[in-house]
Image (cartoon, rainbow, N blue to C red):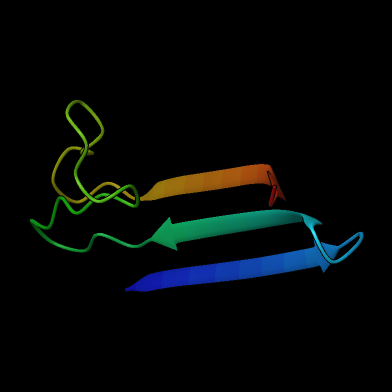
Length: 60
């Protein structure tokens, strides 16, 4: 089961900040990754994984 939480806050029309957090519950022999399977990011079968990301977006 994959759970995610996202938030975004606009400082102005052109600038905003964002945050995302995710948790994946790998039961049994599953080995899915929160980050979409980037090389080296997959957990061992049956292990859970947390992921997070924050950033600033500015449109020129």
